[in-house]
Amino acid sequence: MSIPDSFEITPRAFTDERGSFLEWYRFDRLEEVVGHPLDLRQANLSVSRRGGVRGIHFADVPRGQAKYVTVPRGSILDYVVDLRTGSPTFGTWESVRLDDIQNKAVYLAEGLGHAFIALEDDTVVTYLVSDVFQPEREHGVSPVDPQIGLVFPEGLTPILSPKDTEAPGLAEAVDSGLLPEWNAVRAFYDSLAVG
Image (tube, rainbow, N blue to C red; front, side, top):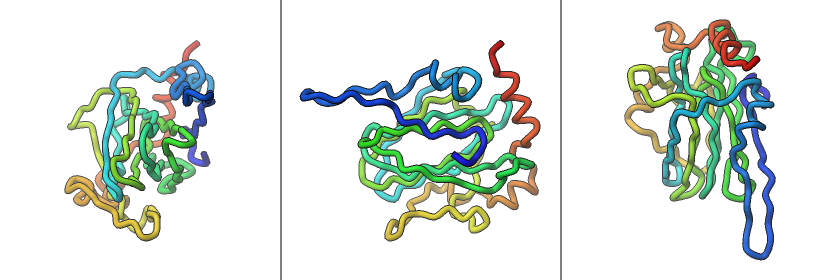
């Protein structure tokens, strides 16, 4: 992916007449790519209807919440948004289709924003995360903020929660000091490195 500290992962699938098998998460392989282990502290699962939007969410760093996201049923358009002030890609986003066909996953480091829109009913999304949910440290930026400019699939009406509807835009989040700072986040990543 073009945003630093985010990765698209395609696991190997093994298929035969019985069906398929895949290792959808490998601690050791992710550590090789990211440069440090994912200190897994919570696993989440959401079920969304077509058009359901979750995000743009992020948590205070440190500790923050790195995420490993995959879709065991259905499909989403997954968005990684760089919310780290001072980052060379600040304010930009990238999207990846995650579904139960290709079985891709997305890893995003602490400080990056995450959102998705469900492309079909009853889509199941799993998230492995590096910290437990702490409401006072969890924040959001509006997924419909024109400054960020997320592009949703044509013909799909986004359905937002009240929390995401009321989230500040990027400029307001910057002005209020809500967003993580690039150098501080980089120092936190360095502190996670092994050896």
